[in-house]
Length: 584
Image 1 (cartoon, rainbow, N blue to C red):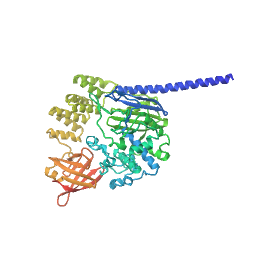
Image 2 (tube, rainbow, N blue to C red):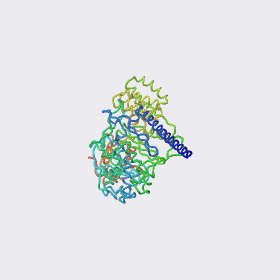
Image 3 (cartoon, helix red, strand yellow):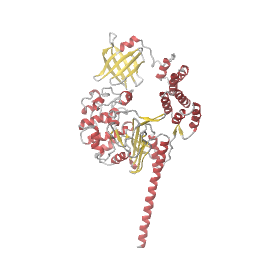
Image 4 (cartoon, one colour):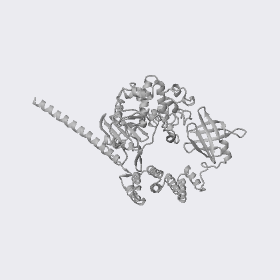
């Protein structure tokens, strides 16, 4: 009896020891992750909330920085953030539920569910194409000046679809991957059409309520929402409020808000059949098609530190005015990383990588201070020479990171604020650090032009086009500066105003899509239905190209020598448009 009792006591002690060391091990990981995140916060690279789960159990959930900077209200694990494109995985789940119910087919066409959609394109684009970003429909967020001209106005889903439904496809459906908000917007409209209910109501009934996700929903500006984070963007003086965006625009592609805690509930539900019982459909939802993209998820195998075997990673990021977000899942070990940030532009991918390294006991690369940020701060408080001396020290330090694009952005921000001398210093430091980049000279040339230093501007633009003979902006600026420089023959061709005027008119490509050609002086412009107008540049006397997209327009005459049509060349397609109205 004594022996048995001793054995039992030994087992109890062993169990307590195992429990204690396991808990300490988890706490050690949590402490390491917390220290890592605080380093990003100190470097102004993160301001938000985080949740990390290991084997399905939460080991860290915490807020960092401010949810509202004007009232000094801190972020917490229950703060609500706009999710941006993380919304897409919820939309795809609603679609799969309707497929399971027999109300939709993945092979069904857009026009099967939206009869008013243009049949020329809608009859060959399937639900699968929309889910996988392979539809070929132009993405509305890619329209030039979209945020300046369209994003502040409210639309009904049906009205907004008309902004892109009549446009020609960029490629044959299923042949290419091109990330596309228009496709997921359409999926929301299809959900409403099939169910007869608003998207937000279907979402709440089919996902949010069953999972007790009470802190998740469709984010509208009007209703009062407790613990909603404000969105900010970094500027020279610190932060500014992010530009307004009407949330009817992102819709089923990016309209949701949530918390890190609710996204953990979502993650856990995906391991069950609570939302989708059909295992075949569930497997299909996470099966990547082109570019590792499945149905609302990026799915790929990644290397973690020095581990011998790669790990399956299922994740998706989001970005919307003032916010960027990331949810990353490792199904094999039920590990989850949720990062929600409300200052825009946080390096969430690098943070996720480091957090996974900690979870798998791999080396971590510490957060590095942004040299661009330090340069910005220094120039606003010290002289250009003092900043230059510090810049040399920062470049040589292992704790600092220099990024060409980030420096360029700081330069343009300063120039936009009227601080042209400071901007010139930034552009010059960037040019010295990246002397093989054409863009650094193009940017500095613009600063010199604003300062009236014509000779220096010419020198920089010449260097820019020398490094990149296809830099159209460089040649245009040199022409503006009165420099006769020989551009590639396929870039700049002089066309007389009489010929240009002969092209002016309205050209109908489809019943719902037209291109209007106008002229101002020696410049020709084209404006497609629902889009801003663009400059057209002559490749020959009859063929013109656009800078904003990879597209060309050719004008064709009839037997009498009159212009009767144009042909739009885009993504391997030639789309003719009959002239229905001549110039006035």
